[in-house]
Image 1 (cartoon, each protein chain N blue to C red):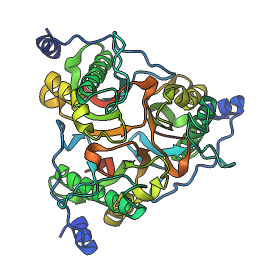
Image 2 (tube, chains in turn orange, purple, cyan; image 1 turned 120 degrees about the vertical axis):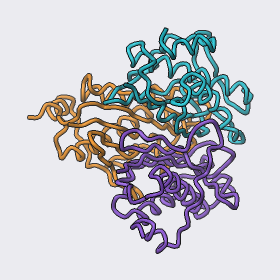
Image 3 (tube, chains in turn green, red, brown; image 1 turned 30 degrees about the horizontal axis):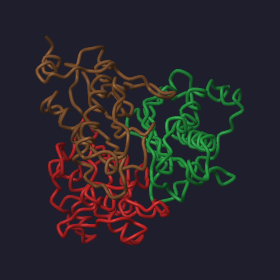
Image 4 (cartoon, chains in turn blue, brown, cyan; image 1 turned 135 degrees about the vertical axis):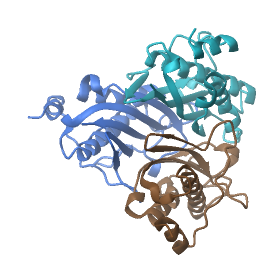
Length: 153
Length: 153
Length: 153
């Protein structure tokens, strides 16, 4: 079994079907060795996490939402790799946007829900540069959105 | 006539003069085959679209504002290509920021005003990865800002 | 003395120790000639600048905060270059996020605190593409966050 797929199994992680964009763009583009993945919101088969962290959603809810974004990112990268996640060379950069109330500032802790997943799944090559900011709202009211740049072989 | 210029004519699109930055930076940088274009706000010769989508501005106003950002992006890319838009190989990634009230969440529909223009003008190579978020405010109160990465020959 | 270090001395600039990430990610990644630097907040040895521009913080406070982000970015790039800032070929792109009240829109002027530093330190190769937006909140309530892409030799 491929290495990263084995790791996903070990972690008990089932990747979602890569979500279709909710608008007129594509899930990812590839230029040279770099994959640019569109912003993935905290949407899953059960609906996912909507709302604002600091109001209806707790820190833990936000972290779980960020993890959903991470699963969607990995699912998109898998598609970009033609199904072979062992082609991933590096998680280069993640940009995390958290739907917050103006008084909620534990934004890094929220986005860790996504960052930790990357390290759990990919190990050292999952360690990435990152930005994390709190925004006024996100598409369709989802709680978290994360986009990313990945290097692949 | 060059292909993309012919398409602009067909669409009835007149590109603006590439707007000058409103601060101490440059409109674009080129590294290898990639052009990084600075955030383009919804500013045009008539002033452009200022305000907040969900308050003074409707969804349609927001879409029109995003289209202005798209025109400005294409004008900058044209300058980066020395005037020859046929050198564009791919619209790689767009980041759309919408000035919203906290309760407005039709953010993807707003940014489509820019994304649809890219596909209208460039066809298949205009299909891009994208992020779209709602923010608390934008430079000088403009309604939309979009930056982008383009691959050129 | 290396050229850029001499320029820092001339400007009276002392670089901070590159700040450690406040979460599970790394300060920068290198892919080919590009360094992606994580979002640097307005944190310094004395604590740094927290709060919201337009409420507790003035425009000038915001500019000083953005300059701190710039110092942290340069410190990270220096680490990415193994200590030799003369390896920097271009400041490619900066993304500036300003913690604002919804009515504050002099966002470009704030981020200039960082942009001007880049030009002061690096000269022409410090001139960069840029986005600047106003956000609802930032990590731990800091006033400004800036991330960046740099080309190095």
